[in-house]
Length: 416
Ligand code: URA
Image (tube, rainbow, N blue to C red; front, side, top):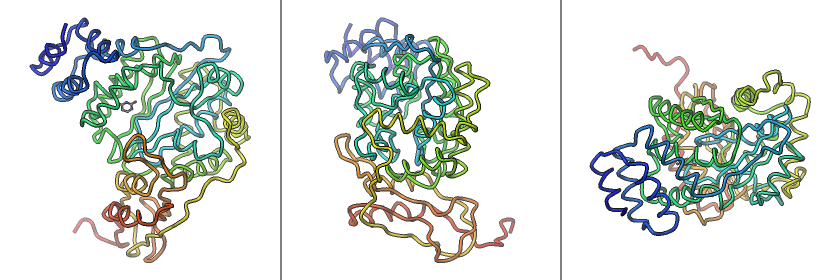
């Protein structure tokens, strides 16, 4: 077997055989297939696609490249969720302790932000002392003792995906449904969760810009999970405007704690509860009441124990950016659009995200929203506050904010 014949098969719109897939994933993981060969193959897959059995075999080969975790020693059913990524998507933070408070064990392997989308680990690292890197034993112990753990995937889990994802990121081959589906599901299946809820984002701030693409991605992932014995369901949710009122690391932790305290923005609470119900259902805990666990403080108790178990201080002051810049409403009227992509890029440029994987992020940087689409605004009122430690970034971020919102004067006749 050689890489060139595998690339040619897919370049010429052929179907990859099981042997070709097993060989290329294994040889790439061991460094015998070069990055330039794998990127040519990834581009051929992006352009020509893969059928269902190719995707299933590709996923199985990525799982087989590393270890599989085992949570069978736990007394509770396991439930996990995965979001395909967006702007202001802090849902994992309140959701994991909430579902744990309702009786499930939530092993939440999470990622870092790249580009305009935020990452759960970057957000949690704004809590002084909190550690994302745990050994498998530590992860199991936090999960067993608190009911929830949010941490980075260890190096042993689907190493083929780790290598391939980094390569796709720099070769314009991220946005391929077979590659996204196999990447996400190889990690989730190897992680060993019993059930999985997928939050597939659709809109300007998501990987999937259209409902048709989001549906295809959701169907592909649900098929992969189900065929591997993981009870898997998917929700398609809007990512055309940011979730909640913040995009940025510490800003989003603060908002998540508000939700756990029984407050917080309505859209964040609504999505948290909707996903919690799906997770509890999939885990066989149909009688649990997540709204009650939010209201009575039991989700907050799990949060505090989970943060402390990973070295964090749940009572510590969260970092605040050194500089703020307020963007004011240009007219009185109704805010009809606040674009997730534009706000995500602004938060990223302010320092909440990184341009290269090795860059540090600023804990306090990001964007605070003072209005959401549908709200009435008055000329001159604050619309957005930009936060950063490095004020030279404001100009760059403002370029992204301009053109990301529309204020339509009240009484405009759209039928004329
Ligand atoms: N998240 C992943 O883990 N993989 C992808 O390919 C895209 C998003």
